[in-house]
Length: 406
Ligand SMILES: [Zn+2]
Ligand SMILES: [Zn+2]
Image 1 (cartoon, rainbow, N blue to C red):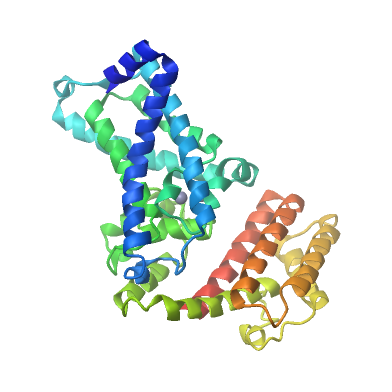
Image 2 (image 1 turned 180 degrees about the vertical axis):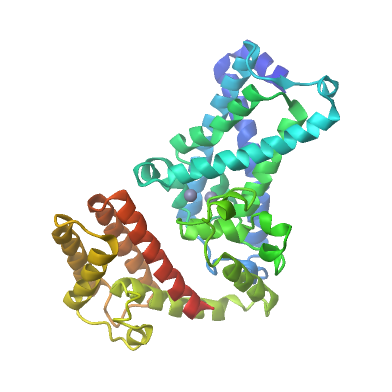
């Protein structure tokens, strides 16, 4: 492999070597991703719908964006891989080709070390990218796929690509790695990532509570991360999330719900009734957002279901007082937050509270409004306050989904 790159580089220049490397990196991701995509999003789309974690399919625009960013990621990975290659030429890096140099024991140990080190690096790097100061610039692109597909696994902003890749030279500089062990490691990484983003759960019931298997992440685990970014940061193993208490509190329960639904699958007609249920949920969740219902019991879910959710001014008062006490707002923040709450409550009133809208339209509009409102709040609140606010909002949202969906 290295000699091919070298020969191409010598004959056609570094540009050709870079293109070749990038193409190979792209194909190694795109072939398995496309196979899985074709299987579950095309061929078995209807039959296997019950196994779909989120009971809807992503928009074509999301998939197009994933492909565009994946191409960019492959070009960057290709460039960086060439960099590593040249470093090796200059004597840096400990890639070796003869197993007898360190023996088979070390060969297996190094493979395990590569995987464990990558798992650890990814968890902490990922949490860092979720810091409000870095999130938008580094990690937002990956999270724009809220309903991930196999193609999401390479869909990164260029800055995130650099961070994702950085561990590779680091590992090969620090420890001797046999070329085949390295190849297997990258293959494992790609396969795990593609499956983790597939959007389908295939593990059996009890998997997340099993004394051994609970340490392995499931597609549901990462799917929840894409859906609700505040939990489930880990990559291969459910180790760091357990140690750092960042697993979603409802991970086990939600996993069982997904698996149970798949078990009860009744045939290809399943999508229709579920879609209906989903739209009902969407309406309730939307209304939860609309009212920013609190745990204080001021307004119950029954109130919302019966359409009893008060005027924008009333809702603003409720949210204002909750945020003031719950987030410990400073005096200078109170009027700004009030202004945001009021404006969005009014906007919701004019754009969403209309009887002739479908539930889905209402839900989509609410999500959009909520996202814009979050952006404004993020600018006014401190990072800690915003984190607290977002966690609470996710909790409520999640509770709403759980209560009504399942
Ligand atoms: Zn992801
Ligand atoms: Zn993330």
